[in-house]
Amino acid sequence: MRSPRVSVAPPRREAGRQSLILDVDTGIDDMLALLYAAGHPDVDLVAVTTVAGNVGVDDVVCNTLGVLELAGAGHVEVAAGAAGPIARTLCTTPETHGPHGLGHAVVDPVGTVSGRSAVTLLLEEARARPGEITLVTMGPLTNLAAAVLAEPNLPLLLKDVWVMGGTFTGAGNVAPRVEWNIHVDPEAARTVFHQWSTATERGATPITVMGLDVTETSQFHARDLVAVAEAAGIGTIGGTDKEVMAAPLGNPVLDLVRDALRFYFEFHEEYDGFYGAHVHDPFVVGAALDPTLVEVRSTVVDVDLGGGHTDGETVADWRGHVDKPVNAFVALSGDGPKFIARLRAVLAELACRVTA
Ligand code: BDR
Ligand code: CA
Image 1 (tube, rainbow, N blue to C red):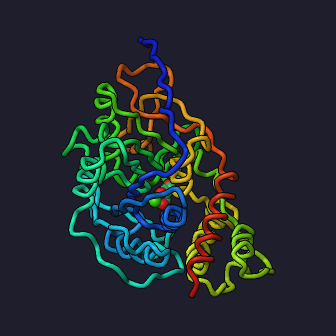
Image 2 (cartoon, helix red, strand yellow):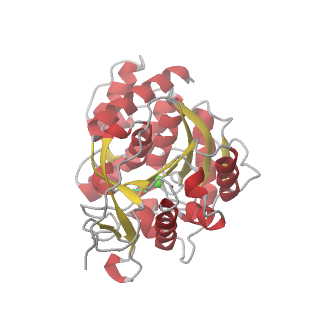
């Protein structure tokens, strides 16, 4: 029996400076998201929390510290988070992100990890600045699940939460309808959506979820790197796409991007049929900063835990079958090309600032 559900309008999100915490499993596209946030003039990057996913958490911490240092954001606190999912054995994805997470790139082991755990950091920062912080998650939801179980008011303490995860109208990248971040820790994802259903009744903002069907509109190609290098004054680069991706640029930011993306491009060439890459995670940061990049609809999201090929599937209840409060704004479409233009501009700016 269906009940009519009143749709919820997304909050009015003012343009301007935003305080962000990023929860990452760095990861090639997480790395781009870190560079985007570090280089974006409107971002106050409060901290970065890490979680096992694409690679083990030690590699995630090392990559995150190294990328931030290289981007001139070495002062940003980086906290170690969950080393594995709530109830499952960790699976990583070296075929997608390389043996240590950054493809063909390596970053120097620099910086010091915070004395606070990811969960402690999230809770302390949210309590210290209620209603101010936007959290963007780009890996499995293990840290957020632990944090919201420890503090059920966390959804009310955060200004907003944006999640890269799931797929709602399109195909999955792990199973027919299952996306990687949710697949790694589906119990955590389910916990998060359930907790948010309870919290929205008390006034919390539903989570905004960008699934693969939207983030895959954000594609980076060799020509984008050429454009970034030209905008950064590094000169004109010629040749085939593969020659472009193999030629050192002599700039620390752009060579990191080039070496990491070359691996991602090779993966996409093999599995998706094009020499380029879907850059999921930075698009979610871009949309958190400018929600006009996506069109969203309110709904109730749950996660299937039934085993088999739907295990980890994100299910959105579009027709009011489920008698639960709205817990999510699901992105239905997004302007990936517009975001890529912004990513190019921020990378060029950062490359100008950070020279060898
Ligand atoms: C997500 O999975 C990871 O491999 C990426 O970093 C991204 O967060 C896409 O499914
Ligand atoms: Ca990620």
